[in-house]
Amino acid sequence: MSVTITVTEDVKACLALRLEVFVEEQNVPLEEEIDDLDDVATHFLAMDTAGAAVGTARIYEQGEIGKIGRVCVAKSHRGTGLGARLIEVCLQELRQRSHLKQAKLGAQTHAIGFYERFGFHVIGDEYMDGGIPHQDMVLTF
View 1 (cartoon, one colour):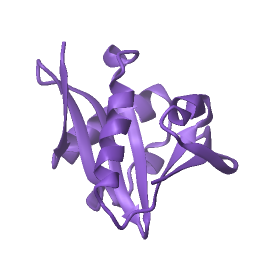
View 2 (cartoon, helix red, strand yellow):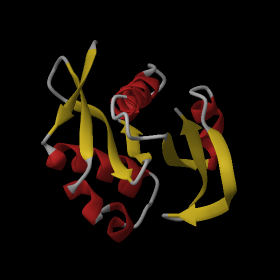
View 3 (cartoon, rainbow, N blue to C red):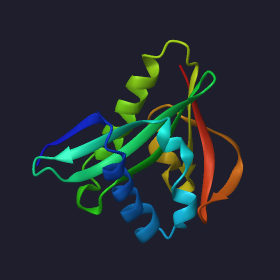
């Protein structure tokens, strides 16, 4: 089944998928998953040919840094390369914003190797976010 990733205004669909993955599967507290950044972020939504939301990510700017976050893939589509496609789409969009110098994200520690494939490297110490160990990672453009 093919998947299409597009910029979306349907934040509710993105949020529903994030609640499924982060809150239900990973036990992230609901109050930590929902924030005011959804109002200013650019959201990406991956849809399968049946019209189901199967992946999402968001980006927003902090000065000269483009932040990637809330990247998740439905259980049904894990292992298909969709996560990598979401990161590639986010990076493509951030690179088009010529004033940005870096991309930054908070990686769950088990996923550090995944992000290193794109050129990200760890900065700073490990920290807890939503009850899950994370480390910040950056990629300079």
